[in-house]
Amino acid sequence: MFCYIIFLIPVLIGPIIGQEHHCSKFHYEEKLLEKMIRMEMHLEEMQRKLNMLEQKAEDSDVLQNQPAKGTVAFFATANSRKTYGADETLVFENVVTNLGEAYNPANGIFTTPSTGMFVFFSTVLGSNDVELWNYISVNNKAVANFNSHGTGGRHDSGTVTTVLQLSKGDEVSIKNSQSSGNTYGENYTHFGGFRLVN
Image (cartoon, rainbow, N blue to C red; front, side, top):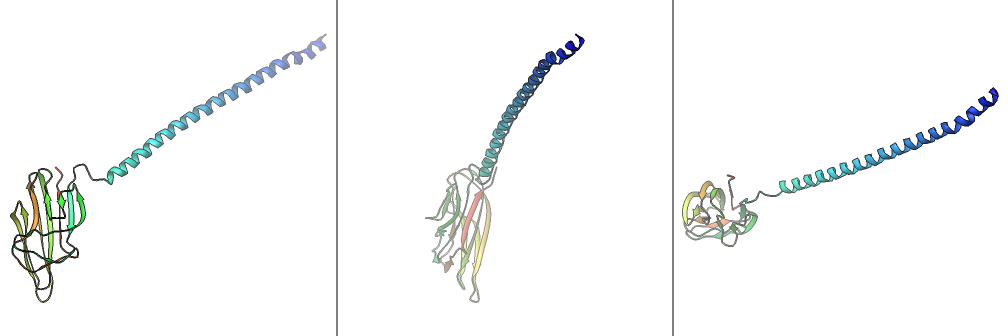
């Protein structure tokens, strides 16, 4: 009978052990599946955050390449040679930059879009053996004069830079103070300016 009991022990215990092993394998697979699902959710969240960061970086690049709101700046050159009369406005028809659209290439006048501090600069090149007398004009009044005097068959250029406090609607231009010879174009003669940041 003892042998019979010993024989029955493996028979009775075997299915129980098998059930525990099967239960443990199922439990392990269930936990593994839960971990995989959590990892997938975590990866999706990381991908969402990465997409947001990439979008912010793109937006930042776009903003860095755009002028700040309210930026006013222009630069224009003269293409052709021309002789101007006394107090005639020089026209710089080739616009390179015109942020704020305050410069008019048809008449050579910059109209101040808002009150502020502005910097203007100009270079005027005269033809061979020509003396030119120019000035920066604000509302048809000279505020800064400059001169060039070519001699010995050579060209010469005059240059000016000014810092001006202006009111909205003020008109700034480059003028010829007296009738004289040819102003040389071909982008040697130019006019530009910008508003200083407050």
